[in-house]
Length: 318
Image 1 (cartoon, rainbow, N blue to C red):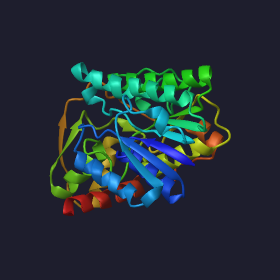
Image 2: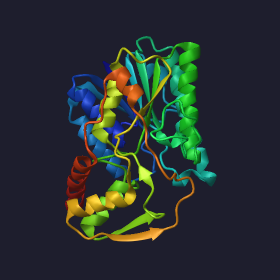
Image 3: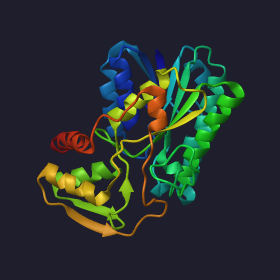
Image 4: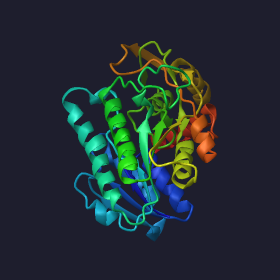
């Protein structure tokens, strides 16, 4: 396999590139180093990938301007992890960045994929945010998407583009709807990293709403394995869409209780108003993906949080 990983300096992208390199594949990684969060953290992520030597090639660039036809010329598999993240910042004037990074960039990548001579599979990182307040739980891929944030709208639009390019041009796409990914290298604005850092430093943990909102959390190694299986399984039809969820489905308050026990510290919790666009509950059925690829979530929430805590302590202690 010669793989392209977009967003390679990010949370999931860096872990995925490492897994592919460890498995013996060649990887081309592209990242534009946007200023959504500290680029020093992205550089540290990238450094973990670059230690694998000459089987990794890094391209610093924007998918909206890079020579994608050239980059894809010898690529067999694409893992499209790049995008503008975050529900809370996707409102108002910042929405333009989400259109560029999540929709326009994906469309341009798909256009280049149409003529890529060796391409076998393109895996797109979608999101459970496409469901909004879902009709049923655990949510099926056939349930109606009803995003509650502009971010979710852009992820769904890009997902629809993947389906369109599969149906009309035969681009071998598969979209994976991630359910709240966590683990080492998680972005600093995401809940678990904020909670764990505050737990070990005595800082304030800000909870939006009452903490009874339910989330289906998925450990990053399970997400990486899902990508690899989606890219290589024979039973994945072009244009397929699958949930990838850890199956935890716990409240934020229950997560805080686990963190308190793991860290051995009392938590300094402050509660504030719920945020526009946040949903009350997420939880995805993975039966279809398991049947197609043999994937199953392997890391429990407790074990994953323990690993995330270890990484957080390393970051705090330098």
